[in-house]
Length: 321
Ligand code: KG4
Ligand code: ZN
Image (cartoon, rainbow, N blue to C red; front, side, top):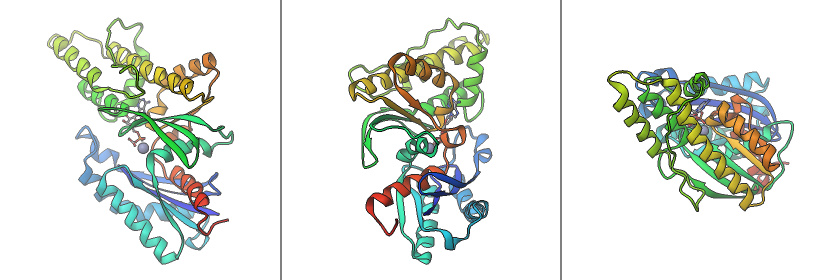
């Protein structure tokens, strides 16, 4: 059972073929990131125009790399939400037309849930129930996953997403876009930063808030900026330490509250080396099995869409074995 997945929610145009929700036969993408970099963030109009330009090539490559033709595709899956509407429209219209022409089932899936599913595209299958954290440029959400059809949102950001905060802090420090990987690297270079930034913890809930710490970094840079009397390395380290500690603590509390022995991580920020270091400590201390996908499946990709689509189609028993 081969599912062709299509993902066009932001600046990546991605297509993949996944067999039985498990074996990745191909996973291709083109990105318009370079076109946005000089603006310091994603420009929706440019992103959707690039989606239109790339979609056909990417789908062709996904089929060719899998050594398959459209005749070998049993079903299609496409990102339905959330995302930039112009970009989403390209993928959805393309997938609907293809499914109609091929007379094959199409499932439209939630991008954030698919990020969590990326953990199931690995050899070692996580055990459910689990707590899931998705942290990317657009979202920061915690879920309780009882099984594939019972996924409950238990916490989310009240303002900026975690990746977005990294990007904005990088912008304040004039480090370019996207900011996450640069700040991650820079923070490693600081010896022992004594700057203190507080990330709001919002006790009694599993929600997050990151806009305050972003503003604190802004004021710090403004106040020390004239004399360039600050170290970007130290700021990066202190900022990162503060936000990641809050994220780790919320994950710990969620696992404890829901008595979950598994924690699934997804989204672009899952690539962060300090987050991974702290998760390893958490895993050892609290005896929680923690999973994160390989780097190419942390960021936006279509394999997670095809895999998750297969599981949902299977539950709906729509013409598939
Ligand atoms: O999941 P993703 O590829 O796209 C969205 O759906 O947003 O995530 C991109 C986000 C960006 O904000 C980027 O700065 C962040 O993930 N990111 C990181 C790292 N690598 C990517 N944030 C922190 N540390 C990293 N190493
Ligand atoms: Zn994403």
